[in-house]
Amino acid sequence: MEIFKYMKEYDYEQLVLCQDEQSGLKAIIAIHDTTLGPALGGTRMWTYASEEDAIEDALRLAKGMTYKNAAAGLNLGGGKTVIIGDPKKDKNEELFRAFGRYIQGLNGRYITAEDVGTTVQDMDLIHEETDYVTGISPAFGSSGNPSPVTAYGVYRGMKAAAKEGFGSDSLEGKTIAVQGVGNVAYKLCRHLHEEGAKLIVTDINKEAVQRAVEEFGAEAVEPDEIYGVECDIYAPCALGATINDETIPQIKAKVIAGAANNQLKETRHGDILHEKGVVYTPDYVINAGGVINVADELHGYNKERAMKRVETIYDNLARVFEISRRDNIPTYKAADRMAEERIERMRKSRSQFLQNGQHILSRK
Ligand SMILES: NC(=O)c1ccc[n+]([C@@H]2O[C@H](COP(=O)([O-])OP(=O)(O)OC[C@H]3O[C@@H](n4cnc5c(N)ncnc54)[C@H](O)[C@@H]3O)[C@@H](O)[C@H]2O)c1
Ligand SMILES: CC(C)C[C@H](N)C(=O)O
Image 1 (cartoon, rainbow, N blue to C red):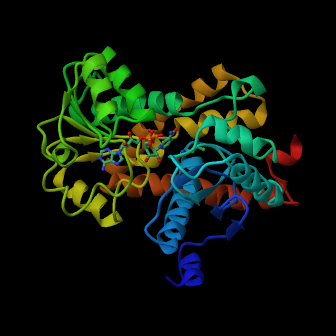
Image 2 (cartoon, protein in one colour):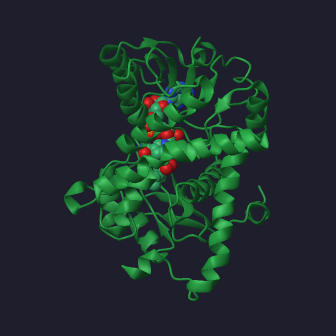
């Protein structure tokens, strides 16, 4: 991978490599765009096949956060971190504190939070060294684990997608295939079960599947069977790139709506879904509940205010579907257009009222 060429092509601002021998920290902080404000995005801890894979993941996820934050109406740019390591084996206090010092060194250009493989406890350790971390324990007056709020936002967004696909936003009696029943999807399944949906679930973690079977009466299938099941809605809630050349021919759902980031392997897969008449719900619009929730901490956390904003996911998606229908473009393009137009509008107006390029943290 030619890193500068890649960064130039997609307009990245900064890539920071952090190494600390003592703790074993190897982290990559990618900052995509700070036009709207400091870059906010979670920290993922994962075992990558190569350093190049890790860098590419950080870059892709950071760009996704630029679009997610812009589309959600937040005054925040996009960034993301990946820590190379096994979250089950390689975590220690020194590692997260060393990482916290690297974040502090960026002086507010990047603010972190949870992502796959990291927890509230990890954020509390990072907080020992920096203020530029959100999703820390409620004991600090913060919002805690963002996953339940992400799940609620996905649930509301799925209803907006159902309205587009089936003419009604009721999920009662709908069959929903859920891939991955981890932190977000477990809570999502609870909302869906309470509304009377039928659930088909899968996960590589058998205990997670068993919990969904026992608590929500879900039907369990093997991980590679989930794409082909008879269902109304497919909800990808594990990792990214599951909508691809192999899976699209198998998917029978009319609507795709789930929590995972970067669901389309390539943008052309969004074009194929559009041609097939499948309602694809852009991932970064539907899964913005968590970031909306942690972003509220920057103003002194107020749960009621945060949840009110999470409700806007329904209307944001209705707008995306409307643009897609009006201009006959795939929904992912409609969402990109909405986000890019906001960034461009703010880029122009900022020169009129924020001459120093100050961002919201400087007003704290
Ligand atoms: N947690 C949040 O607030 C949040 C916010 C926005 C987006 N997301 C995205 O939503 C997704 C889920 O996040 P999470 O916090 O629930 O993560 P998680 O790790 O708790 O859950 C993911 C689940 O997927 C399972 N899984 C992994 N590979 C699988 C496969 N091939 N087949 C079936 N199951 C598989 C895992 O075993 C795990 O149970 C991720 O893509 C994440 O980036 C999460
Ligand atoms: C809580 C957020 C800052 C990060 C979250 N993992 C996301 O992808 O949206």
